[in-house]
Length: 300
Image (cartoon, rainbow, N blue to C red; front, top):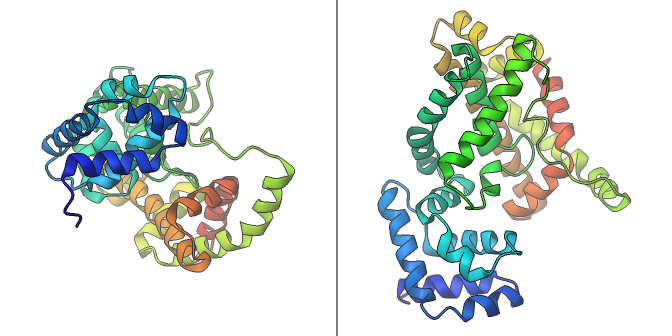
């Protein structure tokens, strides 16, 4: 570990991860090291079970600064909810303790908000399961927790996503006008000739990795995916079938889907010799293929 004091280490890691223009803006902030250290300490104190290295926090912070290019860097840094960003950064990295902390701290309030929509318990469970898959798996693209920009609290950001998903799901299950699905609405790559060539280049790699990942699931996980995707069983119906409560079944399905995508990423890193960030970009290119692949594999 670096012997450099943490404030200086945070400032250096942030500067290194920024574009030249943003780096110059940040360099003009006189109290930058102290500001970053205070924010990092706030995050670590708020989420004591989550161990996020300072460099990882700084790199994630740099991405937020770049994403909000229309705002002064000093404003972005001083107004970010630091503790929320700390948790989101660790969740984006796939940290199990961070994802567990997110579930424990934030999902109960979303459950209550969904219930206040008038959704039946089974629909609430289904909506929560879909949101968790979107956030921490991404259905073939980068997990959507990575898009949290820090303009508001993590709780309010999650509530917006969850209520939109709940309303759409209520439309599907209960005859409402909106039949969309947030999973289908995840951002896919823009179609142009260059990207089409890349899709063709990586399609077989992703397909093989996905098939390998599916074989690494437990028997119950494979059965759950078959029943959910092929047989069309709802979370409520699966709960009755397995004689467990709805929340348990929702967690099982989410875990199975998360496991197959995580294993696909791992296999692609090994096969292609690229880092996880590049793999997420590759997977995003063929996002629509993965749902078809999942259905095809589940039918076997």
